[in-house]
Image 1 (cartoon, rainbow, N blue to C red):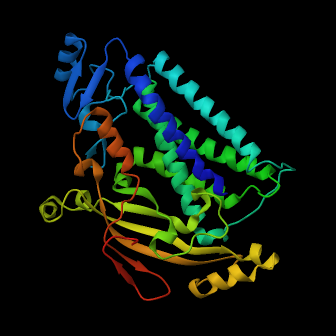
Image 2 (image 1 turned 45 degrees about the vertical axis):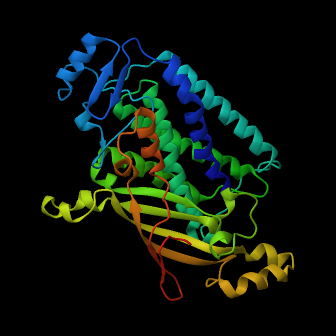
Image 3 (image 1 turned 30 degrees about the vertical axis):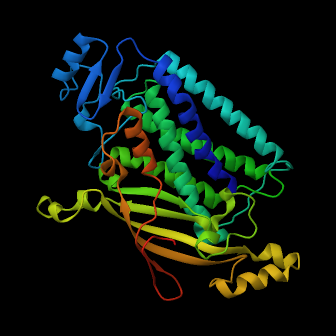
Length: 370
């Protein structure tokens, strides 16, 4: 259902609000600050040891920098600390993140009980696989993936190991998305959607799959939200907030072409230039809602611009091929938190040259979707 998009918004808020607390009050006795290949620490003996053994994980409990990568990019943590080989829970950070995480989730739960879940009833299934012409399913995949990412980043700061943070990040991301789905099952106007559950599961599995099969890191899920009315399309009817305006959403898979090329060919392709493949469903209109209400005005407004009219939701499916940017390479080494922020913003697809395919002729854009 549409309320899942709230998930990673709240997780991002947790990270941004609690990061200063993590950096200021959650430091370990031997704090290690990491910037690319430079290691700085408050303990000179530990600094010497880590520098000497940076490529030998057997002599300390940190993952060597040479092994902490995403595709061909160095990975960054919120605080800049290296990632542990074995879990060592850091109490102050765990309390800070755990309290903030629990508090915001409870606040979100209360908010949704008063709005989206204001009327509850017996649990029921409601398969909506045709709803929004699959745009919501792509959104569920991305939501589960990005929720797993944010939770993993928090677990790393709490002292979870590289493997444990990836595993529990995906498990908790999956659990959170499906907790919302289960509560949808009790909503009077909602229902538990099996296809939403499958999409949530696929997103979490892809996240953990990237950890154990690094080749998958060359294919990164991304998301774009730009109000459809700003680029000549119609927003979803009905919609209340941007979360459920699927006409304005585009979900992408960004391909790291440079890293996939053989060494002899890499010089011919810019390292920060990627290629993205996207899907969107524009001009969405809940035909069943407006036809039952006898609202012919809305139906007539959307009728000329929608190519698919055989489901309960009308719309215009679009497939897009676009150039893309790797922000980690584009803005390299800007400082501890800013490196992590660039890494995180890399999951948002920025406007770029593109070609869009639909039932009409291909359309070419200098800055998609404008």
